[in-house]
Length: 476
Image (cartoon, rainbow, N blue to C red; front, side, top):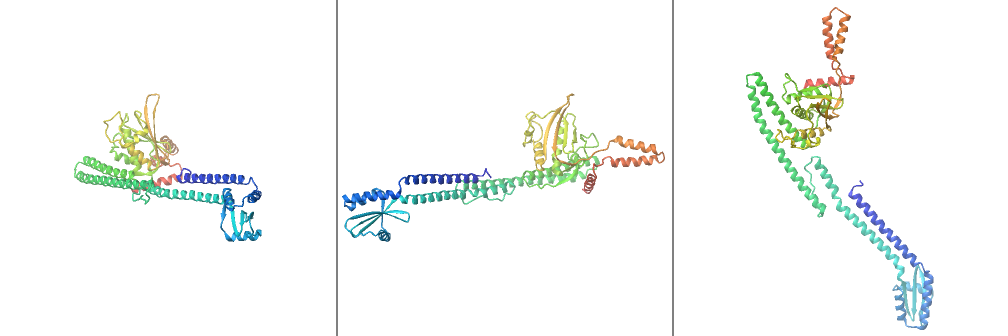
């Protein structure tokens, strides 16, 4: 609120109005003190004496009137007021000569001048000074208030413009920002409205272009998939089918990335095991698990809550990069109960970690490397969309082993533990030493029980959650 331009203008107006009133008050006070130096009644009595002295020497009425005007008196032409004053003072104005008297009426001082059937009334112009000044103060205050209202009224469209900009930032491209105002704010709104229309047109053309490409790619992939089904060799058929399925999955990934970048993707967070995640990633990377598996999952029973497809896309890119740039072509996956830690043995990153988040980033040391430089950009955006963060560190131990660690923070909601294998062996030996009969049967039963308990949840609540997730996985 304190940073609002309306707040600043209001403070400026209040300061200007307060300053104006303060100046008016002190100036009026100064004038009042100056005017009160002489007692008004004594001043008018002295004026009367002076004029009577003048009249005794100078009987010219015009000269007296000129003298009154020079002393700041103004003539009053109110006949009713003259009559009331004459009745109050009981002056006979039909006598010969000139007569002058000061009179106080309704807190106003008058000079009554009579001469042979003529009556002249004069009022001190200084008495009107305060009234005029009050009018000036009132007029100045009204001008300041009018200017304030005018400025605020001209700035009010900024509130409407701000709301429209917020709607546009949330993905609503149907907003309109034009206002009938002709000043700089109106011009700004008009230019922003043009920019919105241009951006909307570009987004529409981009979306149409990407969807057209994905549609055109779907056709040959579908034909290839049908052709692969006709291959008689089962091994080749399986490989070709997996390749075409992977290509189809890549197109679906591009569609998700496009929706994510255009803020049109709806997150669907669910709970799933890390084991299921890694298994799906192995299929995406076309990894043959029957041979040497490059992904070493040391925490398969951790439960993650995230959008499965987006999170799978993030981890898949991390694992793919980890395999490509490792010394041994392997990646380790671990957990600390809250975070997933993906590590590999390899050299440290050459640049700051944040630099790799830029789209189309290319390492200057490997300008001819394959890829478009979108891997880390996709990872960052898909994690940000789910309110997850990623960090990086590089360690080198005393033996010279270099390890990179990529940590996805706060994505694990439940942690499970594995019972050690020697515990199962100890239980088996204890049971076999207790009874000798039916040893084979007991050993088989113990093996089944141990297998069931090998991945026992820490709490009963965790066990119920694990059973629920397993049922959902079976349904899928």
